[in-house]
Image 1 (cartoon, rainbow, N blue to C red):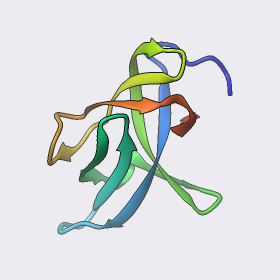
Image 2: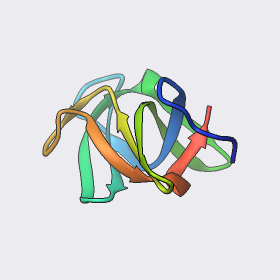
Image 3: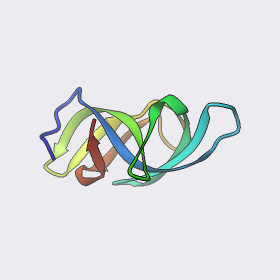
Image 4: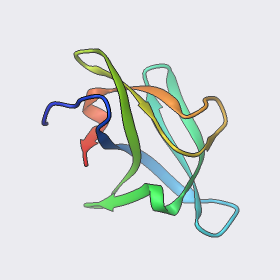
Length: 92
């Protein structure tokens, strides 16, 4: 994978199901601190090779293999800021 830098847009592998409103989906993805679930707009999602990815902005690199990101949406246990293992990110 190419070097990820703050400000980059990436995709995070996620599970996707239908949300309660048109154009909205319920997603979940793993973070360093455990799973995160919430609702995102369809425009924030991308399906590539039968895998789903949610768009995220890299905020900062915490360690060689940990990335802090911001995901737009309404989440149950976070304000959209999450720390993920680098290998979960797909360069956009």
